[in-house]
Amino acid sequence: MINPSKNEERSDVFLPPSTIGILGGGQLGRMMALEAREMGYRVITLDPTEDSPCGQVADRQIVARFDSLQGAKQLAQSADVITYEFENIGVQVAELLENESTLPQGYTLLYKTQNRLREKKAIEQAGISVAPYRAVRCEEEVDSALHDLGYPVVLKTTEGGYDGKGQWVIRSPEEVHPIKKMLKNEGSKGMTWVMEAWVPFKHEISCIVARNARGECQPFPIAENIHQENILHLSVAPARISEEIRREATRTAVQLAESMQLIGLLAIEMFVLDDGMLYVNELAPRPHNSGHYTQQACLTSQFEQHIRAICNLPLGDVSIKQPTVMVNILGEHLADVLHKLPNMDPSFKVHLYGKAEVRPKRKMGHLNVVADDVHTAIEKIQSLHIWNMEAIQ
View (cartoon, rainbow, N blue to C red):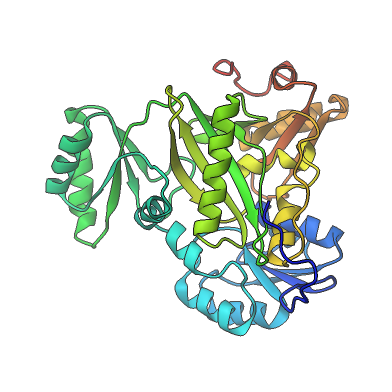
């Protein structure tokens, strides 16, 4: 950990009862707000949906579109310090928030992570490896990229897309033709895609790292992530990886945080290959689904740490108290979870997001299960017979 001078008077520290503005009213904002209020802060959020998950627990919600400059101006005038819970923020809104309020995270890192090509270049500039990739805009560039990368490959939109949306796996020449047709239709609009080599990974892991304006940097324990249908299913902490890989993943996270002059949180998803090599897959400059385990596992949760970081308070201790497994509660799981809630094991901690509409594949909440070891925690989840756990080792 990098420690600041203890004698320095800081004008950029935001103490309770300062008002924290949160751009976005989803579940990440909700959990930020709950921690902030527990610490004595006031909270105001901006979201276009009335009674949003964050709005339910905040002091006030501004109901406005995310690209509304008037709404952003209201948020800037009402808050002492502002943060965000998602990446898709326009440059005009970000500039207004920076100029008329305090946005400690700034727009630079947000700008880099909004676009997969810019993100990959920033990772490489930090001296970190990513999977081989090419930018593609037309049929000819698709052929050239396939020649360089071989099959299979993953084609991704450069902006937007989550939980597998905006991604296509191409396994053979027969699967290329509809992709070319799509690119021909969309390429005329100036769109660019990223084509990545398929990575035969052994594990997917993530490390969430916090950094404040003092330069204090603190990585959380590594989590192992298991996906189903391109949506995060389980996060296992501590990850079932070697100590050598754990050290290298942690070093990678800190190196990226320092290179990008992070303030706040940065979630770093990585692939672990059979030979132990690491590739960084994606970044998120905010709390992350794979960090929800910290609410029960760590002395300081990712949400409290994020508030500490943007307010320039000393970062909290993230030592892991007990092994924990997080499982996502999607729309199709919610009824069963509620039915079984009255008789659940006391070690099960249910976190629901307050979303009004229940839809299949929509994240409605998560369940953290603590145990003496992660294998026992996984067995406890299996015993509920709610989730498909056949592929889980």
